[in-house]
Image (cartoon, rainbow, N blue to C red; front, top):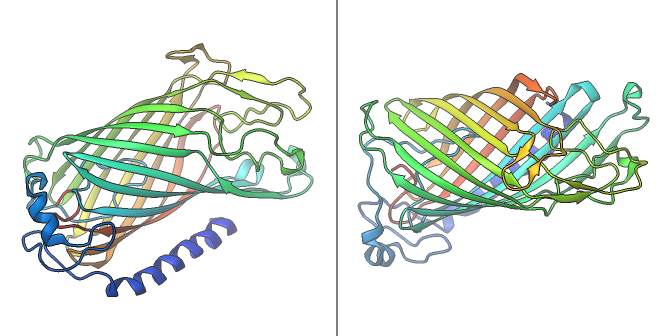
Length: 366
């Protein structure tokens, strides 16, 4: 685990702890069956009134559905009920020991339940890149850069809810997501003295469609996600590093490149064992991979490299504090490389905390 992961993760967790200390004065415990238990923390002010107005949008109640941190790369099929929302900062430290480099990726996720089986999510990523001295690679001094990466928006549409949380062959929860990325991260006018650390995005507007599945089988949960991402063409210049994280346009290049990425296939899944339902405590084993082809679905042959990788990630989780009104779920793990093609062998320590602010109908999966 690099120095940057420890320092930035400390800031995130310390800020979270301070926030939690201030929270009790703002929210009181309440159960979905008794929505008149107290005022709701922003953006809604009165749960009792809201429960009355939105009773027709109440989600199905699951007899077993503990609130856990869940996997890092695989989405959750259930959507937030109307009136509930959560804030989830992540920290992924992508460490590449071959070139003494790391990239601390810290997306801040905000998810809001819209009702009608819909949820709106935004991801604002903060990135800290670092490159150490490595004479064999031509790096004669260290460099680092901090900034904002590409912004991600997502609409989740839940198609089905879990039919029975005890029977493995019962219908699972299934969801479609519609995703959109805008290139808010720096990718042009890169400084040669920064050795690529000042590149914080890839310059493309991306659209994606994902399929998500989750099945409860007490005490286990099974997750699956698969989807396709179309990356629109972009114009890039000297020093630009392609999506594979290896191939770079030389800094001496004088002409720009009309870049076409291939289609990106995303897949992930996990099995979760909830050892203690009350505390949402347990372990997960997750797999995660991406493959970028040599052809773009809409824009023809790619001139960016094709690449792929596959990782495995053991993870731990616990929920504290927790009550029907507010809960915080904590997760930590490490993603380990199993296979890569034209992609760096990256080791990735990870951490997250999810702050749930529950409306009159509780949290997702309840």
